[in-house]
Amino acid sequence: MQRVLVLNGPNLNLLGTREPEVYGATTLADLERNLTAWGERLGLEVAPFQSNHEGALIDRLHDERNGVDGVVINAGALTHTSYALHDAIVATSLPTVEVHISNVMKREAWRRHSVIAPACLASIYGRGITGYRDAMRALVNLTTAPPEPLIYGETEHQVMDLRIPAGAGPHPVGIFLHGGFWRGEWGRDTIDTLAVALYRRGWMTANVEYRRLDTGGGWPISGVDVLDAIETLQARSDVDPDRLVLVGHSAGAQLALTAAAAATTPPALVVGLAPITDLAAAHAEGLDGGIVELYMDGAPEDREAAYSAASPIASPSPSLHRLMIHGDADTLVPASQSRSYVTAAAAAGAEVEYVELAGAGHFHVLDPGGEAWAHVLRALPN
Ligand code: DQA
Image (cartoon, rainbow, N blue to C red; front, side):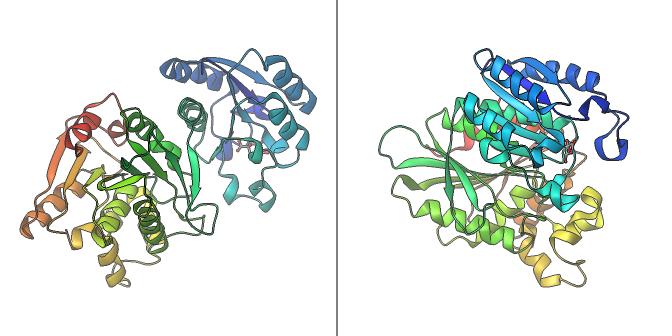
């Protein structure tokens, strides 16, 4: 992946002035400057194009089909109606990721349906303009190390992306659980760079999607999904059950730690990157605008048993091999979430390896070139 066409459709020329409460204050010119900078970090040259006309967008796709390696598209309202754009994406065979600035799943019903989505590798929405950065990153990860989707449940959200190394196996497997405060707009693409990094070291990787708030989840459903995904992998003959590692970030670490404690066969290692371990404390501190109450369907005083079951800190398993890593400059999930877990585990006679990274924020721990990842690699079973 070297050159990416970034297409913006109708009305996106008015970014900055158009419904700023929905689309933000960034203008199209600002966005295009950001695209260039984000592209540079990913090693991509960005070719931006905006038009209010369906035919002009289609013509651009045709014209660039031999000039670019992939496409990021925000088709605006054409997303919901244009079969012609769908067909143009298919016709050019260009790998394409769809992006929307607003949370289309939480607006009018007609915005929830994208007719171009079936032609796209991934759909990213509700993350403001940084969604374009995430869409470019997803394009790189999904094309340079293409995964095989494996459905492990009955809904479209119970799916995992498998990357399987050559050879019959059994392979050591890294199971990745993304964060995002259990919100629908944050998906497995956010942790995929780590999955790709581990796959490149010869591991099998499974980047697991699970039902979140707005996608049919919440506690305990999200937790059940993660357990189902783990058991699905444990039942495979190409998976080495003795070298199964869970890596969870943020809310995904809450799911990793609770699933590891509940699994019939525990994993060899659980890595908590900026983990949420104590839901009552997370609720008291109002993390992410009070999301915990929605996830848990009530406040701690009304749902005591559920908070205890969902909080890894309530019953730190004595035998589990754990590595927790937290930045002391994390403003989204404070390092106290890790520190108090380590203290509770010690009181229960359990040992936890804990690394606190000076000056690191919430997303630092997701950088495969960073210190956190070096600690993870060191802790992996041989
Ligand atoms: C949009 C969402 C569409 O529903 C809308 O018609 C747009 C912008 C977004 O970026 O959120 O024009 O694609």
